[in-house]
Length: 159
Image (cartoon, rainbow, N blue to C red; front, side, top):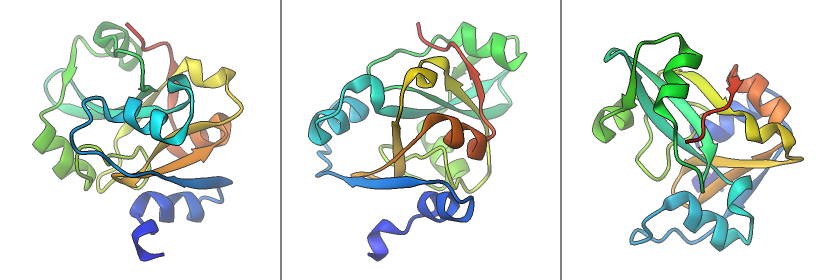
């Protein structure tokens, strides 16, 4: 059970979020981690969300949660965040800021809580799946309560 108790899981429990844990065998050779997770779990890619870390105006890191089969529209993110520009953060810096390794970055329980932006497509789902804080562990929850816990701004973010 200790492998299932990540900072993300602890944060979800502490917030009183109703959720389920889903596990799969992580494949380090799978290119698109979110798509691989969806396939391994037998879920539609639009239900499994990936957490990306972006940099606003070269200074502020933010968490961006979008469907695993989507591409991030950096201009839409910058606009939603009130920034002039957005770019993807350096993976090593993203790992240091969140406390998670790439492939296991969760929007929950980050070492340094980052502002969070959630793609509006989540609103049409009964349940969405996000990383649980380690490779091969996912958290399934209703989008509304999850967005509340994340204090996420919900906006269109797909390219």
